[in-house]
Amino acid sequence: LRPRRIALELSVLAKNDRLASENRKWLSEHGVKTLNIISSPGAGKTRLLERTVERLNLNDAQPARLAILTGDQEEDYDAERLRTAGAEVRQINTHSACHLDAAMIGKELSTFVRPGQHRLLIIENVGNLVCPAAFDLGESHKVALLSTTEGEDKPSKYPLLFRRASLIVLTKIDLIPHLDFSLELCTQHLRRVNPTAPILMLSAKTGEGMDAWIDFLMPQAQRERSPLPA
Ligand SMILES: Nc1nc2c(ncn2[C@@H]2O[C@H](COP(=O)(O)OP(=O)(O)O)[C@@H](O)[C@H]2O)c(=O)[nH]1
Ligand SMILES: [Mg+2]
Image (cartoon, rainbow, N blue to C red; front, side):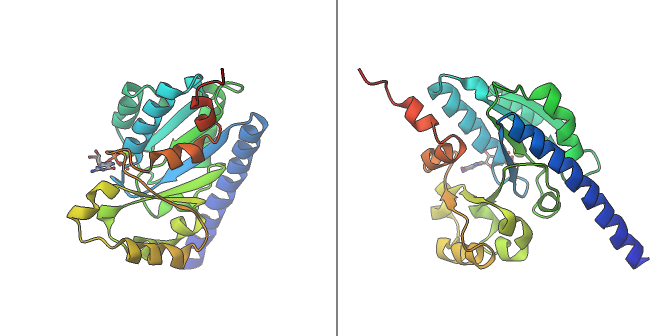
């Protein structure tokens, strides 16, 4: 039985990789930078995106540049929260699946993402530290979120996601004074599995660290926010 199961997993991943390459080609041809945000449930993905949308809509002359796809097994609570914050968003329900896959994203691209208008697509994956890391969606970057309440050792225990991430975001730093959380130990665990990816530390609640996050998303946004020279 065992060799058969491995063969099936390989073929599922190979099919996903093919579809992810098609997504990546479409996104790159239409100039859309795409982030695949992955974390355990409750690490603060949606809250960070709510704050992000509010910031960009407040300060950006072209709010339509950002599109969001948000994945959960059931319900559309996150899409509702993000729409209320001002986002252009679509919910994907995966039902029995524990992750988004490239086929689910491919279905949304041509009907939801508007080439020439959307420059950035953010995908909020299903909350899970394991499965989403294995499935390429065609993104430009994987972003791993880790919250201060999860414990410092999670990067070592679930290394694949943190190894594959281009950016690591430590969330809920406002809670550190109330927790037995060591920033030094957490950084050691992160660096064991990923020696080079930038680590941003932020709080979506207080706004601390949000500027660096916005800079990563849209490097031009800061410049566009500055007043025009007289
Ligand atoms: N104190 C604090 N709470 C946060 C922060 N970010 C998210 N939360 C809370 O953490 C919980 C889970 O957040 P949510 O965005 O739904 O997480 P998701 O499941 O990763 O999308 C909610 O109660 C949020 O209000 C933060 O920066 N600081
Ligand atoms: Mg969420």
